[in-house]
Image 1: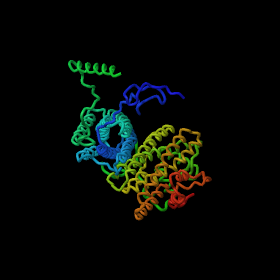
Image 2: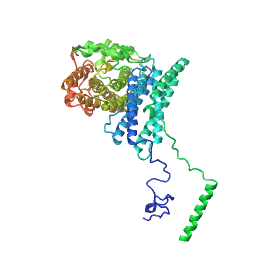
Image 3: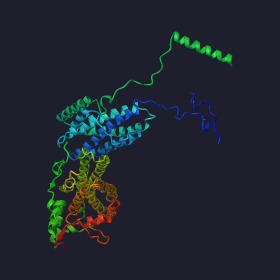
Length: 259
Length: 292
């Protein structure tokens, strides 16, 4: 088999072309835009994950507990798979912890007391006529929050060294988007009166205020950071541009002499 | 949300009616044929069913409650509706029981995370079963709420001990489900009804997993605690007796095709039952006086 020779240079930044041994490529294709450097150290990632895990475990348990307290059969049936999905998310985090050097895969911790208070309040509705509050807590407060935080995490962690986390988050985000849609459809369908809509809104605000006091699922550092978009280099104009061109021209002339 | 709810707290919509849990009957060591008939009529019956059974009684002899109904018989439609509705309600209670098991023990630091994970998985599975049986109710022309609900299955899944919980729900309730599904699959095949037997076959496969959860967890949670193990085994005997439905559930030897509800021995073995376990279940029934 004959391989076509490429003009490209490995790691030289030139174009990569060709087929077979002559293709002098880096270990990723030229269209790959992943980042090597992410937002957090290994230890910082572990700390976030144990908070995520705590929230997922408690949410799954609460959804399971609510199934029996909800009279509407369609809502009851909607909660069953979601109970499992959040347990599965927690279990994915459990599996990820030892991969990040955490010795105790059972670790699951709330970020602070305020988040415990938030979760206690979220899981407090119990009566059979409190379906709206239960759904709002799940689908308008905690699931959207997790969706935002997981999406943020996925966008800022390293796509390369932390790729397993990025992949895990993909599954969770996919589940949470579907849950958000299903939950919102159900809330809108159940709450067809002004009174019920008001109840839903008040409970949502009440929980949101508690959530913001906690900072979020990972505490004060849940969201936030410096902008790190891949900014273009500063524009070179005027004298600076003239100088750069003169320097380039001199280098080129020197090269010809040397050659 | 509080921990450890009772049957009275289970939420339902307006279609559902409840009959009282016949605890005395279920726990009795000895029952009469008449008590079995009365209880089964209460558990399975509605006006149409009662009318059918009264017509049978009028022709001489007692009602046909003790024998298996064949698909081509006149009373097959009402019997399958009654059975499907009973299973539908059982699946709903199993869903609720699994959900409560995921919630009720979150403060128990001794309980491994895998327990909650398994219960959450079961919560999802039972939801599919509720959906499946809802569709099957439609298939056999039965409305939700057409028969009364009895909460005796959930009654035995309310324990505050997770080991008893999995024995009650997973080993015993889901074990009973295996027996019933095995029978429903036979019924569906015999009726050439692919909708029934093929869908129930999938549900049955799930139940094998759930019964296995029960076998594994009841042993794991009591492995180093003989006293607790003895308590669990005692509870298991009580629930097996209760779920024998007054001795209606019995051993199936391949020849006894008239048995009302034979044990699903192969399915139970797949779920980890030993021959001794199966013998224990078969022998758990109360003495029945005056059996014809």
